[in-house]
Image 1 (cartoon, helix red, strand yellow):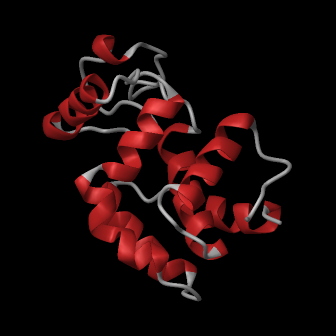
Image 2: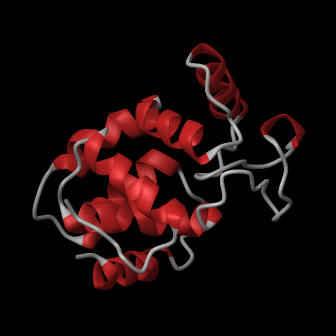
Length: 150
């Protein structure tokens, strides 16, 4: 099990869930996923695009949560999933669970589970998963996680 002793509690939780629930074992794949989440939300599940900290039902524009679910279908999917599975759509636990089960993540899961690939390889899968418009420092964040992981 890959660990990150210097990561905060939220980061450690997501890292553990990616390994146990999504069966992702490659250190580079995990670093890229974590780097992308850091870019999207800095691991704040209740962040609305622009930085406001709000519960799920009060973020009315832009992206919301860990991966900044932006389209109406993806945002609504979070709420529907948590209603069906009795989780809080504003919580780290509920969002991590939804993120791993969401169709877009599942569509790239085989790629994230493929071992011994480059940051660029996994970053391509992250792009298809998230559909980010601004690349930002997500790649640098990924390399930073690689240095932190044990």
